[in-house]
Length: 225
Image 1 (spheres, rainbow, N blue to C red):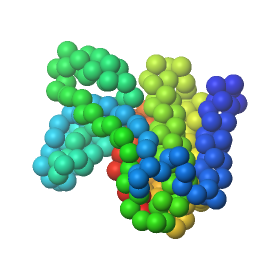
Image 2: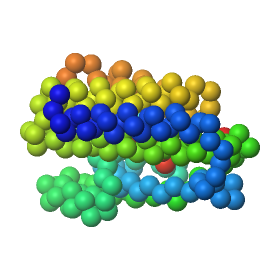
Image 3: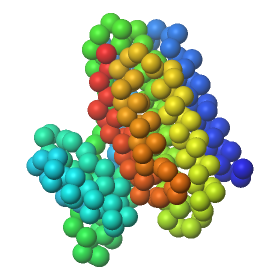
């Protein structure tokens, strides 16, 4: 295993270990007035907005056929069909402008989280666990993003991509094992299902981006109870 891949594996294992450890912690600095303060910013390049899930699914297939993620984000009753996701507004706008020059109709959807409401006493007592979960998911999404980019540039082949994906998968499964009966259980199960459905044999960059955006979606829309 290469040094870069070992570094990625170390990051994931440490992040999951931290998320597991903090389950014994009581809400402290992260909890302020019934809120968990945590900022994450995601910039999604979207191909089109659909007003129903059927048309969104059709557009998703089209985007995927062109090598885009094709993940459908539901936001304010609209279905946004995504191509890719970035962590910098400048990066997203630069890529979007490049796609537009190639006559690919797209735009940037910005989603920034500032804090999460802790809806119950249980959530307040487990705010540090939840914060660890969210931070770990963000880290894993970035690993998927980085691996997809390296596949596209040719820096990674299938051997490296599969090793990284296996670490990503272990990270998700580790989180699921540490959250078997709380508000993260169902979202993590959905991510596990994506790992099983999208990654059979060959690792494609578009599937890594799909998984990346699916993770970001669950970070953005996490309901803490």
